[in-house]
Length: 363
Picture (cartoon, rainbow, N blue to C red):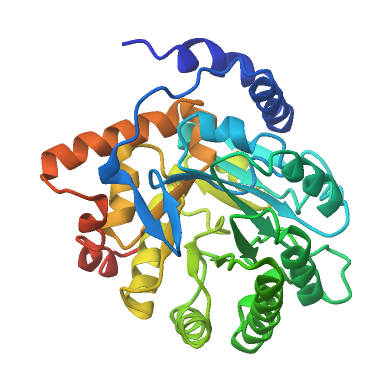
């Protein structure tokens, strides 16, 4: 069967530089011309994680809808949840262009965007306009490059979006803001989480509801680094981890010319590395803490493998560049078929079933 996206739309989009093509895809979603996912929800794919009811486990990762322009349109494509951002208090342009690069043979992306976004206020206005609509929309928060107090920027994100966010993600793992990943160090991470969770507690009292907070970590952590994160997280009232952001590794890439570009790599080559780190974090934090698996999710098979490696939910973004806007719906449909084959009543029953395999994976 001919895939119309790969046959017609993708070659056209790939005539443009990646950042322009990204803008065109956002514009296309805004027109409402994209076909919506019409398949009914499968109750076997639904889960309650961190107190939130997810209709299916497939989410859009942060980085696509940086300015909260199309969260409802993304949900209409079949995603069970959508995450906007990364949002910083002040508008910032990010790094100089060009700053996104396709590695077509590898089905990978390298970016060094640097948290380019329109800032809190622009996103707040858009999210406020959809405040009464259904659907899980998370807000990914970060710090401005020139912030004198980066922790204060994360606290500002909690306070500004508390009335509108279904959940928050504190993004401390982008490699494209100098020094940001230093917040993953044990002492710094403790200080960050203490401040963020204190702000969440204060806002929860005002709002009468508790909004979950997740932490997004890098795939390039050492074993000691993973130990430290697990220790800090388990000592606090954090709601879960997102594993993982982009990688600085270039191992095994075919496109060596583009591989020399600076920035974080995502897409299919990240799958094994990110899944192994996911399993190692699951092993460290135990069965109770929710984990969201990200990195190289390109099919129902890879999504299910993340779940079997320890994820409760998964997210994707880069693989949609290569597979098209129907990817989420195709994965959801494929997961339903997988549950038929596995003979289980809930996808949660498959979590951790290949944990030992991924714990021993050499990546």
